Length: 197
Image (cartoon, rainbow, N blue to C red):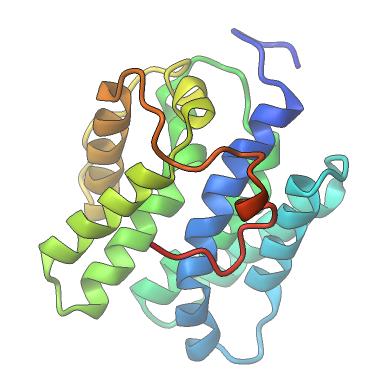
């Protein structure tokens, strides 16, 4: 890939795995709200195809766009965030190696969205969002953190998801020499579905 720095396919798969795990955490919120719309699940499936070793294809792009369209028509914020996270999972295969802070959203927005969904489902309790961000920190592998550090930090935005993403971005960048989180190639996380902590 040409750009400001290199991103390998293996690194993109680590990013996509991180994003898809957060998208899966909240997919049920969308599916319970909009029972007959398969678009976010299709985006997650396309993300897993890439993570599991398939080449990037039009499938990731198309299903990502479709999931983002589903988000726009979702009936409430948590469902919108869930569908958008699924779209983000599929599009992670196409993260650009351009040193712009906006690219960080492709890495961390689904995690921040999942934290916001959890917070909303708990009646707006910010301690739930904090706990979910901690889980997101634990999920971040050294490879993911290395990729993240190639981009400029995000600034705290005007909405809650942007502020949660900024907090997560800051805390991951502060992690030095960190070995927690699971290795992208570990047998225990070979497919990652059903992982909980």
